Image 1 (cartoon, rainbow, N blue to C red):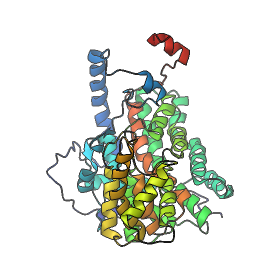
Image 2 (image 1 turned 90 degrees about the horizontal axis):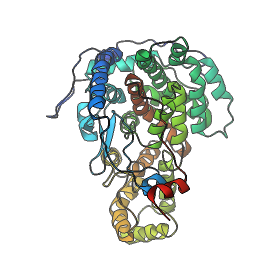
Image 3 (image 1 turned 180 degrees about the vertical axis):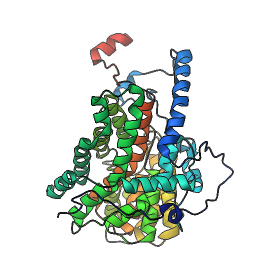
Image 4 (image 1 turned 90 degrees about the vertical axis):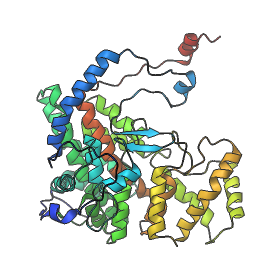
Length: 467
């Protein structure tokens, strides 16, 4: 399977002309302080301003208390503890995720789209996460072009992937490949050469851009090796990031490409405390390069309580579905109650959210538009009305509403991607945009090594005066 045994040198014809149409903008205030198509140049303009702002804020308010920590928080996974600074997104319990202040529906409307497309391009969200600005069409086109130029995967990484046994899980393969890419780190080289701390962000930026560009190629090699013939198509410079990814995966469906643009956009970021985001920040705080930091992040994402959850949903849905295509509401209620006797309902509830996940809703709207008669979607739609009342009656769910994982697998299955073990790799490709844009800012703001204080149970008892 000697695929992609050298760096790509793709032709890049007229991407900016081909990719993006005019956008329709709402009355939402749009922040765009620079017209430069060069993302690194825009960051270089913004970073000194942010550094000055943070320094002044810390000087005046550095000793201000921002919350209380309880014993239950310490034993309960630090949930609710305010202990991190993440600029790229904030998760509100009632409203859901906002990317740099913009909701998902606002991003859907405001971010540029591909020609003939209705879903936002992930390149646009990456620009927004990095800068806080809604990008222009030219700016998004420049990111697509830049990622196409950087997409080549070194031969030693391809050789390793081609020689891994098929028993190695797709997420383990992704992590191994990214770790191996550390050999290409410009950040590590610059650090070894004694680069100034104020310039760290520039090398973190270069590594992050290179890594994001290569991830679809790596992910496609894994998919084609495990589930197809091992052959991967070359990058095309006149396609956007998602379209190239779909092409390399071996699919030729405009709707699936649109789904991938939506999927790769909405899974990017979910503030800084989730396992994958926090892990990338934590490992990066040791000045491990972006490749090592992201590989660690993916090891966290691979867990069943994080990125693997959409697979758990599909397994449960298939148990429900069985041999039947339609169900009465009562039959579904009975099945939900039976499940609750021994476990939980996969895809329902969230550690922070207290309403239906907006990411679930945009996927539901996509399904209503493109696959309203699909039997599995109909089941998901029916469960959307059945499960929350049962969970409320059950009394143990703080949030009875569906989250993003309740829907994503159904859409992928509809378009022929039935290999559930692979779904978390898609999640990982998307999550790179959020955690790596945050990592660039970690280095720009000079955030230090993360080292919280831990205590023993005995020491904690003494602290609180327990007998």
